[in-house]
Length: 176
Image (cartoon, rainbow, N blue to C red; front, side, top):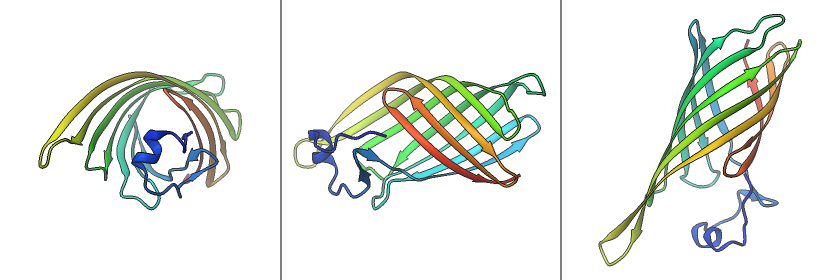
């Protein structure tokens, strides 16, 4: 995700910029998913290197149509995530996305359109022993495009998502 390392919000809130490179913050993420007969359930964990900041979450994908030789797959995803490790900020995000994909041998291009809602509360120190709570509820649209390359065990995904900010992901997964 792009970061303006010289912006006041960044320099005043981040002690050490060691986890940014060329204006981008890289955040490794672990996803564990299990396909079931009625959908796919997944859990995620992401951690900002050298900090206590982490994000826990999960999602459920429900296929509306199952793709075949000539037909695409259409699936609905519901997701939730929660920020941890920042005492001054509570942040929860809920989302829903509609995915369309079609495999061609080992290559599966896909796209998604979705909606995310976040609820946040910042606890700002005010007078000694007191804080002011600032809250915000935000809604945003998300658009995602990507391609998955499937080899027998490893799978590679390259993805771009446009929400309020653009983000890029390169993923490697193992499994059958």
